[in-house]
Image 1 (tube, rainbow, N blue to C red):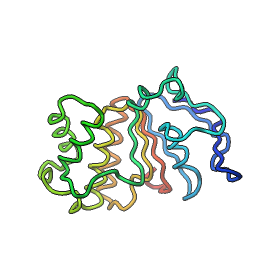
Image 2: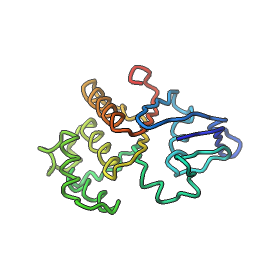
Image 3: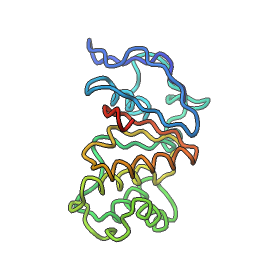
Image 4: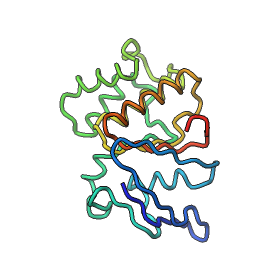
Length: 192
């Protein structure tokens, strides 16, 4: 992933100004800064949800404009909103997103994701009754169901206790060892 001189303006307000960096397979990058620093805007650009006002973002040999849906299929995003349906069970949430991604072996993928999230025993429980840490673990596995090579996380440690935060950090290290690129936007210097 190569970002060169990326800027983004919203009218007269400048959210990003000439941001440049590179990430390779198996790297975790922390985007640090206070609220309003442009971290979420940069993640929106990297996820192809927002176009830069200027600059270039390259994913290997491709850019977002030329790669389109094929590129998006290789990106996982976990934003402020966890995109979980509280009235559905953990299993139903994951199955819904697996079908949305057009994945095969939905049941196998869902059960493996629940195991990684350490939620097998809560698979049939509605998400509305989950703690923030449980929802965060489930949402992370939702973002990983389609086996993305690039994972973008916006303030993933928000509202987590120490044990849940450490478990999340351990999961990031597993992803790094698997050769994924993980980009974490946070204002928490200690977690970074």
